[in-house]
Length: 362
Image (cartoon, rainbow, N blue to C red; front, side, top):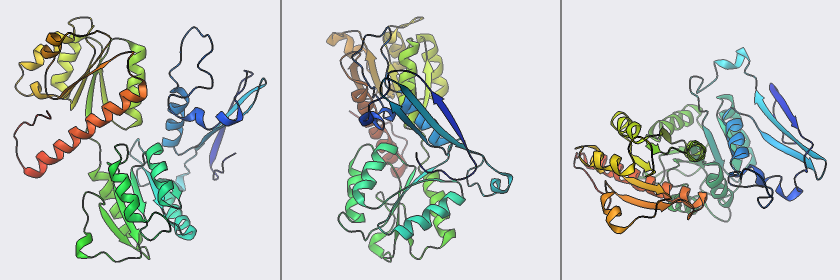
């Protein structure tokens, strides 16, 4: 079982089911994974349950794993930390629901251990890797809040690693702090690729100030309004967004969608068309008349097959169409995250230009 420090509570959950094959013990905690999706069950699962459990446990500073024997059953374990009074004053984020996850990438095991100890004393969650390839894989799967990146590494060096991280849609928004024995020059000032530079040997105060700035500046402000009357589907979609730390607001009816759109002023509207109390067409027609909300980026996610004339009616800002049943959950997630990245880029450009002009992403 994984190593965990003192002051943790271990929870154990056992069943007497058919068990899990040894080659599936790790993958079942990934999103949209099931041991066997071909059997005949009354209700098809989403493959999100254990991914949600893992996310919740990790956000509380714990670990989760499973042991299993085929045809005998499975035992799930998870740990949660017990915070002692002596530790409370050390918490960097004691008033926050989210404990930041820091990815440390350094080929020197002593440096990795030193950084991990420093960060865990301030109650950051930490994952360490020894090379650039591992950093890219972990950043993609765990989506840390910030990355501490060494430059001088064998194989893929820090600059090459950062280039790949900034090219990938699922990692390009993660702030990077360079942590290197190299001294920054005038040509290596913080930019869109990295937000700060901390020189080795490490000065603890500068390290934590850089982390605080990176986490503050990267706070996610994207707001998504999901309009969906199917409670099961809405729960699955909300889970997707929460795994990306996106602020999600849910409306169940057309009337509620109109009300919440005025209150929330969302950055993206995801809209089903068949709704009680006013369908999706009614919602869009109302928003089209609003002088601020008429340019909201819109994603139509509906089982209804649309004629070209109907698509023209469903026009706000940048508008995309996804048909339920025709795209996998992974494809839906990818399309939404691509669109949100476009929105974030556009918002950044507007701020940098210091202009109030409305921008359409056509």
